[in-house]
Length: 86
Image 1 (cartoon, rainbow, N blue to C red):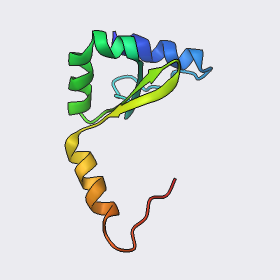
Image 2: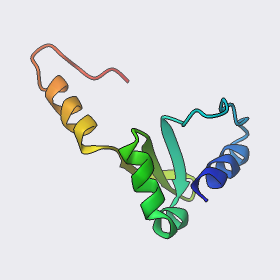
Image 3: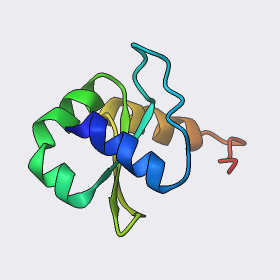
Image 4: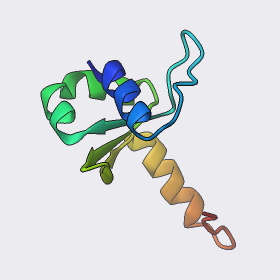
């Protein structure tokens, strides 16, 4: 379900699905309804290292990522002289 949603949303945005067979995307975009319906699958993907962006009306609403990656980022950017680059 999550995989088909990703392909549908990419098509809506006019992007081609450029996934190479067997490779998991690093960032997965899902709509709010699909996130509610299939939370267990989303959490499995997050545990495997995928960052999930939950969207409402094709706009980012929330980001789910592993707690470990968030903690590492917080530590890195709290060091003197280290800044975020967008």
